[in-house]
Length: 285
Image (tube, rainbow, N blue to C red; front, side, top):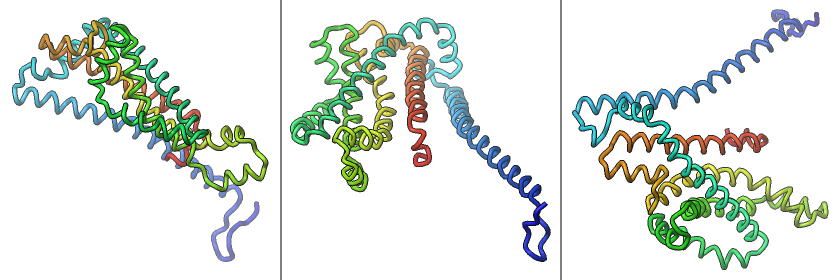
């Protein structure tokens, strides 16, 4: 074996070097597994602690069930009325997903126009800001009057809520390009289309996914708020019905179902981000 040690030091052979390298890799893998499990278990532990504190508060302060039910009562409703809750979740999920898709598609398209035509941004961006400042509860009745009492106004509300954050982020991402990159493409005689597809779009993707993760949650909120105005089915309608009937366990169970769907939607977008932006993992960590 080759002696890799310095004079007077303890000899180091190639075999021992490989062993040390293998041990280092094992330590690195163990550390990585620990971090993965910590990220998974910490939220679960926090939820368990929250539920225990909630349960203890209901018992200690003798809170009436119609004001705040215990977690056990909410769990019973989730189990006993699961089919009814899922039936009402379906239209809300459809409205949120369609609104998410339409709103973000419109925002990405308009951001592309803004990058190509500065005058379009100067003319249309103030209108987008003005529309975004109108409260959702004020937009909902207007859209119901314009689009009827079906799923269309709920989809429109979800789309409008998703639209503005994506428009701002996508416009910034398409524009926030280093001058060195543009100079290199100019030297290579790249066409404007090639500059857009090879430089601007990849640069905008991290900005876009940041907006999409926000939109995944706000789209569900928009669909639920839209269902508060003249709807007989959906998570929003069920929240209103259970509130008027003082059915607090059903109200909390409905909120849990809506929040769970919103979290899953957010997780799906985050998963897609991890698959698409593999080259950006180091910058995000």
